[in-house]
Amino acid sequence: MRARKFVVVGLVVAAVGFLTYSCVSRTDDTEGSASPDTSTTVAVPTATSSAPTDVVTIEPPAAAGAAEEAARQGLTVAFTWYPATDATQNDAYGRARTWLTSALADRMIVDASTERGPGVQWGEWAQQGARVIADVSIECSGCPEDTDTVVHRVATIKQTAVAGATTDTVKPDTTVWVTIVREGDRWLIDDIRY
Image (cartoon, rainbow, N blue to C red; front, top):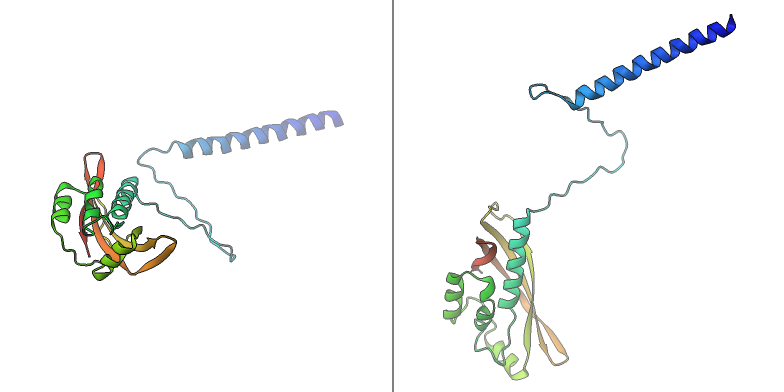
């Protein structure tokens, strides 16, 4: 008799387990295959401790990254000067032509006067045989929204004059606002404003 009770109890437990599994399995299947007109609700746990929450970092679109890199490269070349051989700092724009639109390159190469430049310092650097190396950082503080073809950024250019074993930081840093445009599969600097 006891053996039958164990068998019956075992069968009942197995049946209950099977039914429970079937219901849970069916619930999971229906949740994953919700029809388009069915709404689902997701419960969000509330924080009850002072544990740090996850921080979501939004990366700029890949296009913006490519535009920023083109601007960084172009501005680095445009603001790296060789006073001993360059007539003016505008000669560097000729070297940077690869990263400039035709209109900007033509304007910057012809225009022998820039709004900012080293002035008398240029002659001293030329006598010393110095080269002026640019380090460019690109930021976006208050920039207009990026599009697929136009990106606006702010660039800070830090320059260092190197003559032999001597290095001097050029002060102040130069800040420019740049517009980068897509031409075909390339990003080019279309405007530089001081």
